[in-house]
Image (cartoon, rainbow, N blue to C red):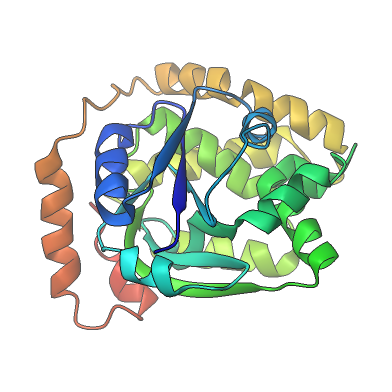
Length: 272
């Protein structure tokens, strides 16, 4: 039996409590580390890399992910240096994000990587940037595995605004912009989650033009929680209440009725 640790990262997401419960059930970690309310994510990564890990593998996951499948058998059999998990994302369909299965030697190598200064890749994706450098240093590659994991369903409007402001900043190459624009075309116009995401994308495109320096982008990301609150007030949008377990179970039932889970268009039509 491999020893698996869980690093659970939360900034108070609406799904936090339920996500942690499902993670404990479906991963069965021997040790749990909760990284709570540390912003921006680059600072959270600094704290994560200070931890003295003992497990063979560490599962890093965000509180916007709800693991609906028992992962223990895979975790016991897995020998890969790094496994990125494919999930079902409310906004972008089947993507790899949110849950990262990492062998301890990779994590230790991440600790040795100097924090890149003025590096836009690090500003936008601090964990991914450090991990990619560590994998390259070790001569290892990432692998992928699909699990039944819900990502970015049920989130607070304020968190959706922040997420999609950052998503816009991460989507500025021609290819990534096309992917984001394609996703937006499939969004349910009657779902306020999607309306908030579109607002955040439009707002960021106006406030942060192409060519903005990484330092200014980092400052903008740091201010996003306050900006999100201000914009929701302007829109006169009332925030969601606490998440009920039944909402998650209802989505699981709907997910199980989809005829072909590999069709992104089918997935986008859920629109809860």
